[in-house]
Image 1 (cartoon, helix red, strand yellow):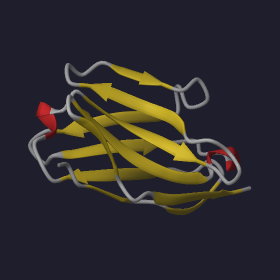
Image 2 (image 1 turned 180 degrees about the vertical axis):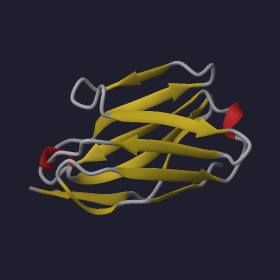
Image 3 (image 1 turned 90 degrees about the vertical axis):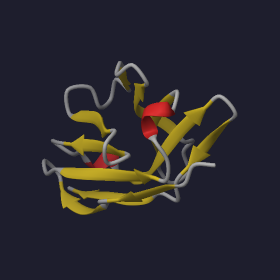
Image 4 (image 1 turned 120 degrees about the horizontal axis):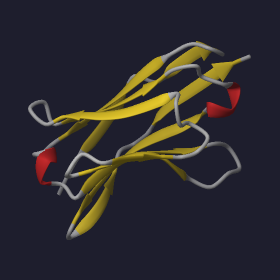
Amino acid sequence: QVQLVESGGGLVQAGGSLRLSCAASGMISSLNAMGWYRQAPGKQRELVAAIARGGSTNYADSVKGRFTISRDNAKNTLYLQMNSLKPEDTAVYYCNAVKPVGTYWGQGTQVTVSS
């Protein structure tokens, strides 16, 4: 089992920045991959960014150049630095962890970007 707890969401004006954190209950270095997803009202959950065990990353086209995913294995924490935020980034952001035996989700944190 992996427990994930997100934090760092909030209300920010367009053009601003936020950093999301996801604290994991176990050693994240043993996970196959971790990622951030988001779900806006009335829309499907979508991948925002992911980082593999080896450190390779991938991003949704809509956030490339603005968001950065990173992790601190010593702190068992995943981060998402979000810069130049836009109103269309408004959503609940979820942390995700993938192990060979299953996929785990956090409870989500709300990000609201005002215009």
